[in-house]
Length: 253
Image 1 (cartoon, rainbow, N blue to C red):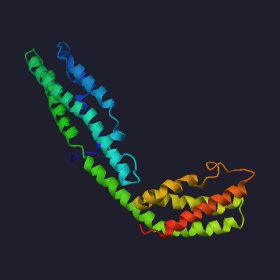
Image 2 (image 1 turned 90 degrees about the horizontal axis):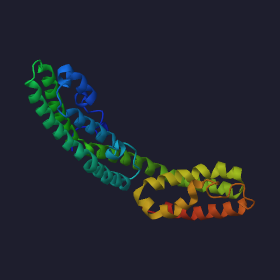
Image 3 (image 1 turned 90 degrees about the vertical axis):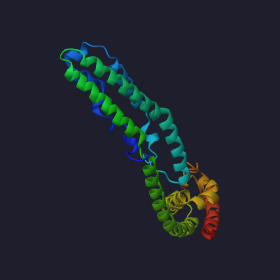
Image 4 (image 1 turned 180 degrees about the horizontal axis):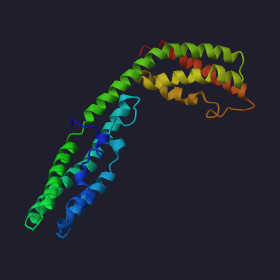
């Protein structure tokens, strides 16, 4: 697919194939003739409302990793097949119905204006079918890939300094293992390491399963906040983290 952003599917829908527009454009003469076109336009509008645009467009929400992007692409293709393809089929139904309406209304005295409105519906529906077929999913995918690459480059640059800052912070904390010291020397330093590990594929694959157990170094999540045994438990956690930090630092990812 190449062309429009998938997330723009609905806003690209021409006003000429909206039922309210058709009801107004066909005028009094057109209202006297039953064509069934309005019902098909209403059906299209209902189908469009059911499309999950965020799922349809892999670039709607940021992806940290290529694996996450791959899952979104699979979901986007399923959404296209299950929602957009039926819309395209409905558009061809509308084209056929509008052509029939044009021919029928033309035979009616003073029906030229309404017939022209029906022809406009047919043309707009046909053009919109092309729009639906040419959603640029590849463009969205490449946009996300570029964003992930940029995030990886930043994470790689930050990892080394984040590890060093954690080691320094851990040293300071172990000499003063209090909750205030944790907030000053461990919490943000640990989160910085976590952010880089979560972003970098090789590091994440090797270390994240264990490192995520530190819960972003949040004392509440770790269930040690205001714990009478805070010193003992926090020192144990920090020493364990230091062991992993050393392994991460020596890893040639």
